[in-house]
Amino acid sequence: MSQRFARRFFLGTAAAAMAAVSAWAEPPTTSLRPVGRDADLYKQAIPNVSEIIADSGITGEVAFAVVDVESGTWLEASNSNDGIPPASSIKAITALYALDLLGPDHVFETKLVATGGVVEGEVQGDLILVGGGDPTLDSDHLGQMAEELKEAGIIGVKGKFKVYEGALPATRAIDPEQPDHVGYNPGVSGLALNYNRVHFEWKRGSNGYDVTMEGRAARYAPAVRIASMEVVDRRGPVYTYENQSGRDVWTVAKGALGKGGSRWLPVRRPGPYAGDIFTTIARSHGIKLGEAELAESVPEGEVLASHRSSDLRVILKDMLKYSTNLTAEMVGMAASVKRLGKVESLRASAAEMNKWAVEELGMENPAMVDHSGLGDDSKMTVHDMAGGLARIHGTGLRPLLKPVYLRDDRGRPEQDNPIEIDAKTGTLNFVSALAGFLTTPEDRVLAFAILTANQDERAKISRAERERPPGARSWNARAKRVQRGLLERWGLLYNAKVAPEEEASEPEAAPTPDEEPAADAEPEVEAVTEES
Image: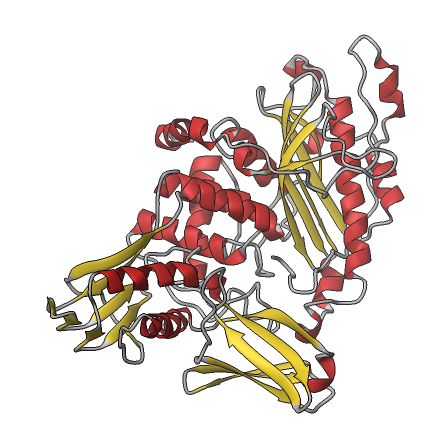
């Protein structure tokens, strides 16, 4: 790891040590309470790897690796060099990439730039909404910017209202293989709004359904004109999508709606969407703007209003907590732009992160096609993941990860359990991942990665089934049992610090007492997220 990388992290570590978030309900189940080092008999009750996998009933492939971060000693591993989709666990690496290149105190700024000066409240040239790569911008922030314009006495624009989204390369969807309507797979560019989603709400009335499409935030919820929804009397499919003259045109099957409800739909044109919303909000403040047009570049001009994001450390903590794909893609591409000066596409940016991971984290064969882990073609080995995390322990990432709690016999999180775990999960259909850090009761720190997948089952899923495929939830539950069993095993078995020569030094030579059976796969999938 370069001195530059380590120094940046150490400078930010103190400020990064935020309070842990509330109990998290992912990995471990029932826990064995560790006892003192002088009583070794409890180790005889610790299940071996093959028992853990067999008891889970999982099918497909199970790969894992665990390493002592102080000595660099590999303690246990299996299938450690197999490339497996890492799903959202890769966001931990994306966070490292962004922190290294941009710095923990980096903020993203969105501006309103006027050309030609202002005369009697009217912008003499154009007004440009300039995106600065902020993944957290929402309608309320645009509302605040409109309020600033009003306070400055702006009433209109003589020229045009334009939107600039070219700070980052634009793509219509993170993964084109996902269903059209899933909110976790929006378009991406250098300007985002409301996580590039539109809020679709419906309510049945006496004459059919009342439907709204809004750019909803806490204060502002303007109607959206760039996206429309029509209720159609059909049995299926539930949703259809078409690009019609620069607009997102949706239909929904009447029979699927019931009395009422809502969901978030993806936005495919982030720049025009933000322009649409800002035009409506500005008009509500008495500021007349024409329809938004895309700007090819940012001209010289006067900044009339701006919005600055929270610092990168806060943004990444939320990204890792909520696993927001859009945030991962935008901060990852922003890091690539900082590293290269320009980046042509999302895939090109991911390729640059792969190179960085080799140079800075000592990885051997990272093969990511995006920064969120949503794409099927992304592959990672547990050797690379666990090894990379071990190399950067103590440099600012762990305080950003979620705490994971072992559970008692009744399934309740044991927040006082002496085994402490902070990690990033990842869930796709028939893919489940977990990677992070474990501290044993005797303060031994381990880095680990667990990747499970049934790629044969995943390959059978049609595009239309991606949101909720048969068997996915039950398989994911089995994958979680594997994760819990392994974490508990490692927290107990490797509790005490020992001399390096007493343990294995290479991943595949790790002391797994038995060969594990082949593993199957089925992940838990929420109604609106394959990977959220």
